[in-house]
Length: 412
Image 1 (cartoon, rainbow, N blue to C red):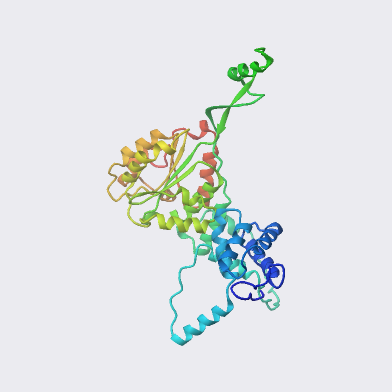
Image 2: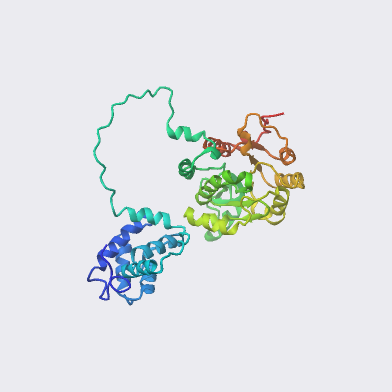
């Protein structure tokens, strides 16, 4: 990159000097970071730079962001890219010299949400050095009865995964699709081939021809997927699973409408608006500021009671499906859990309890919280690996008549 003059690139018009080349390189950096930047955005940015004071860094940043960014969730990535690309090299050398003279450096601040993505995009400018050519050793591998890494990842417990395996699992989770069975609503829409006649529309159309009915207007019921509500436990015993399942809930929230996500430990927190941010790093950064009780205790009864009183009438309409993600371990000895779970069960169409403790073959409902909630759920499923998530998606996509029967529990 050609180092810019003054605060940015130069003090001449944008059509001359090194600024066009730098602007094209900046557009390539944004495109590698995932932003939809093409020739139209570059031309619009060049025209905007001709209309402002090129020596003012604030004006240049505002002009480029207004012309090259079209979505609000891309602002964080653009701001990080602007700070990294259009930096002043003299200011960096001066700061390094002052740090050497003083003999110490302050600890680096926490990187912003888009820092990792921009670091990967900046590394794309410099290709890695070529590796020395080595003669591969002649080995013969017996691939009989061996499984691929992806297949092994499907059945591995989230709690037993390493950091690299957790990252691979998050990528697999982002590709999962969650279709729910469509439900007929009370509303109708005009349809020339609809199954029922619309008498009101027929009479209204006849007024155009002096009251003569020339044809029947027809209509059809509106079919829409029901709302999906997720209540996820983020206590200490569920922290490892909640970290991975939050990626699943983020992907579902951005894939479909009418999805509501609540986190609870010692209190209930609605994080639906934060998870609707398309950038997962920015979304989880906002969630971390919203949730003060991560990896703390659990008050299942109080949290469910709070949800029933404050949120059930808002989000549990039109045959909603509720996913209750918890291990059932309550610090208050299941106080009020049975009453709150019963009311929640009667307010929704399906209540599915996802419990990671079901991964054990000899699991028995010995805790008071598990015994209090079991009679009030429709399905009791494990959620500890990718295979269990795929089974959950298959169950939610099944027809209502086949998916709602009374479940036979795996223990007496």
